Image (cartoon, rainbow, N blue to C red; front, side, top):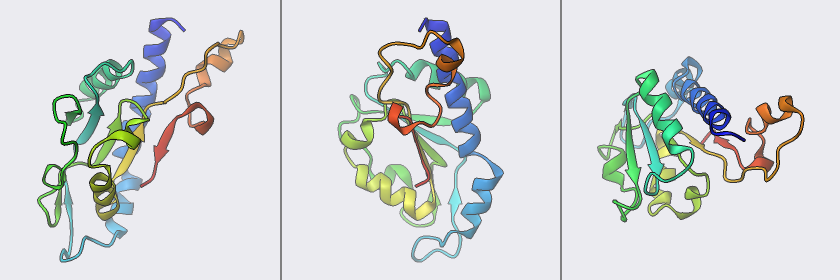
Length: 166
């Protein structure tokens, strides 16, 4: 796949993920969540956390580009600079204020290797945060049918695309 087509595919993926993470339906679902213990209500900042490992992933520039284009506030957690990974104080104030609306992994396999992943999972469950991970696997060859190539990364777990509700 040429670079322009790949960037278009990844940009479309990030745009869809951003819309899903910030959709009204998600906000309505958050209103129905039981707040963390000791909280009558929760406050969640409208910001995303993007997890990378050295900003070297093929998808990272496209993720950054589309988030910047949309004006979406985000922070980057670079695992090469922050070897401690995710900490509870990075995600919330420890009670009722969450700092991130959603999490995007620049490479899907990081959900298995990120230090502090259990802390992130606990935060996601407590605050009803969504997670999206870029595809882990790309097809080795493309179909001769261009229509098939345009659709390969869209929500097909066999291709490694993950969009997890929790």
